[in-house]
Image 1 (cartoon, rainbow, N blue to C red):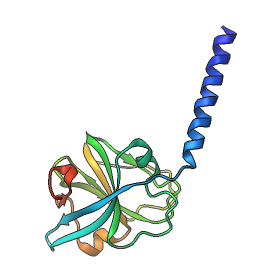
Image 2: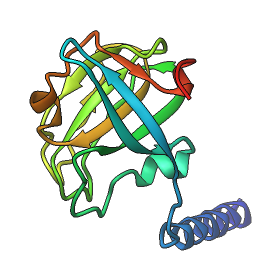
Image 3: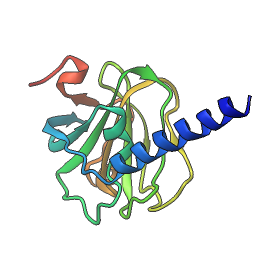
Image 4: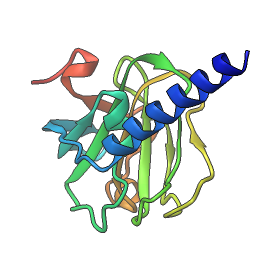
Length: 156
């Protein structure tokens, strides 16, 4: 039994070391454009796409700034309840929780940098779009607005 426990501890240590080695590696994100169609008009953003677990885990951590017309789109592949946090994220963000049809389900505005508090969807969503804090208010983005991007079967 002791050998089995020792083997489990050793395997766990090797696994943790492998993860630690990967944590230092830079994550490279695919980029593209999306549009948000609101009552005021349509707005185009250049976004990085976080679609793998490693990309979603990295997100915008460590960033010190985010340009006004840029963001990060987290693709969870299928609708589900989603919870985000601001660990190691130095800038305030607006989070748009987007359903499988590309409609904004709910919004968290001006999230608190470096917070470990979870920020969640009000129900199942396919994706989360993170924008610079204040963008939602500046552009008048609201729940029900449409996000146009290929992951929703729309756009480019």
